[in-house]
Image (cartoon, rainbow, N blue to C red; front, side, top):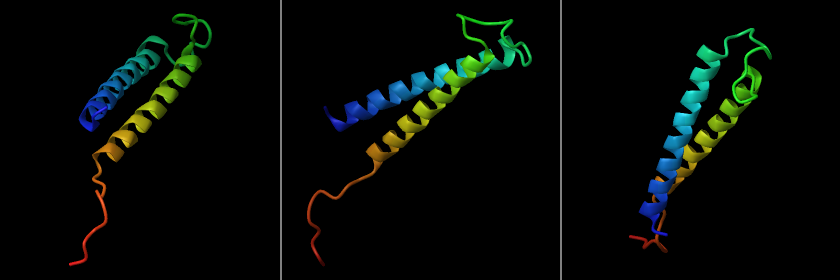
Length: 83
């Protein structure tokens, strides 16, 4: 796989993870209000569970950003000439 194709794939996945993270953040903040406990849930996930999903999405986002940054760094192609 070419480096540019890999970088594009990482960018798309990171963007999708960012959208999911925004969605879960808005869900926890506005739909599942603080103090709602187990009374309010979405797809059998209460506020605490959505917070855990939000956390792991943040870990994935950080990993994707770090891997993308590593792909952007230039590496030496061979032995350098002493000049």
